[in-house]
Image (cartoon, rainbow, N blue to C red):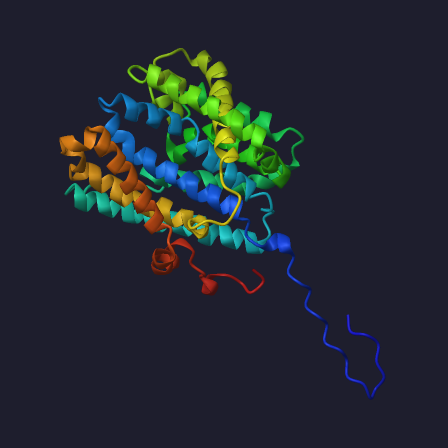
Length: 354
């Protein structure tokens, strides 16, 4: 407010308040987002190596046990402020809905071209490959005010996940099984605060994370020849895994607990200081949306047909290529090129109030 003044003195211009330090990006979370998307892409790149490769299968199982739960949890943490305000609804539309429409069309056209199948159907209700996460994120974020209003939101979300696990007739539209299956992790992220992550970043927790991770990897190696990775996909009910539906009452909380423990171990070792890849954490959505074209191209055109890739050195080369790929796709130049479809402004579409 301007100070009172006489007629001969001009009003003083109000000073702009200093930007709070908390508004600055936290390198820990940017590091976490980048490392999580690295795990996502490595998991996709390792999948062809699991057919006969026990070590690759063990790494694949370990990563798939928690990488998408971690992705959902971090997404929930950064969705805590969503309150249906016009500005936030606008960002939801431009940052989730528009990219979904654009990339769902792009992936469909890519499939038609790569497979020479012009009749391949296009459907907004049946997300293709990685696009399911944008549908889930839209639903999760749109329902955020409801979850924040509940006294015990995580158990309620777990109830929906269990319902999805035991309901074979729920249907596959809008990836509803996955949306509900990963919902508890998003809702848990909504309930977390910065101090919860700080508790993970202590020397004691980091040291405890090492044997836990080793046991998880060792267990994955032991069960690799027979374990069904579909348990981690959450694409459908447990009936599709060849067990009675009631088993989902127990496996859903158990898988939640497993993923939560491994996510905690992962987050405990995420660096908190600014590193060479920290800035890439702001571009994870770009990497997520774009890497699917390369991953699918490798399947369509038989890139994994070379026997050398299924050797230990070949598996390391695939891993290095996956890390390099996602690093490039999250980089500033790539973001500049694709910002018009991943983060479009679309000012012409919205009222000035937003």
